[in-house]
Image (cartoon, rainbow, N blue to C red; front, top):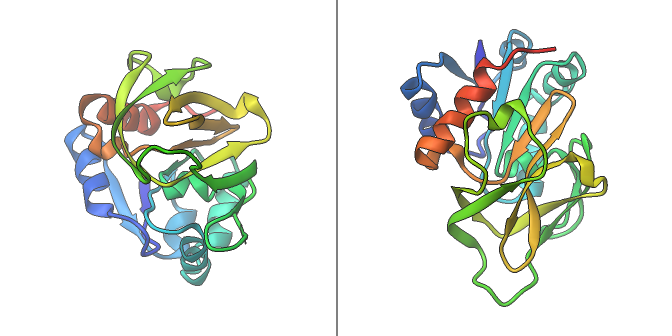
Amino acid sequence: MNVIVDYQAGNLSNLKNALDYVGVESQIVNDAASIYQADRILMPGVGAFGPAMESLKHSGMLEAIQEKIAAKTPFLGICVGMQLLFSEGHEGGIFPGLGLIEGAVERFEHQLKIPQIGWNQVSYRHEDPLLTDIPNNSYFYFVHSYFGKPTDAHVTLATTEYGTSFASVVHVDNVWGVQFHPEKSQIVGLQLLKNFCTMTTH
């Protein structure tokens, strides 16, 4: 089963509706037992890094998610769900993240409007099953003021330009993260979700 993690930090119905549309079965869950039964895990998120991490801890699902990732269960973090993959977030202080990707989540520092809201291009640095049948430089829908800065450039699958070049898709082992909202990104976003939920695990 593909599970969508409900830790009170995301718009879950849009994501489930998108998966329903592409014919992928999924279930919204908010308990550790359901996480342990998952074949794939999708973790959306909106809002601030620190409160999102605290919500994940208080839900009782954090340890289950960590164990499933260690057991090579495919995991996709979306928006703040991607940011939580990093070592720490710098929003309103310094907060520890999941530590699956070494690096920090920092605020945009430029003259463009913050947050970035709207469509922007995603440019590939590496091929990956998550990006199958999605043309390079496709437009995806973003809403964010912070972005992850991986210490190791090799984990960055794709970048986006918004005052600076930032990692908009990351991948390490069985873990992927996207800064944009695939559930709001029309055809290409639906394809990405379908790719994740149907890719062969290894």
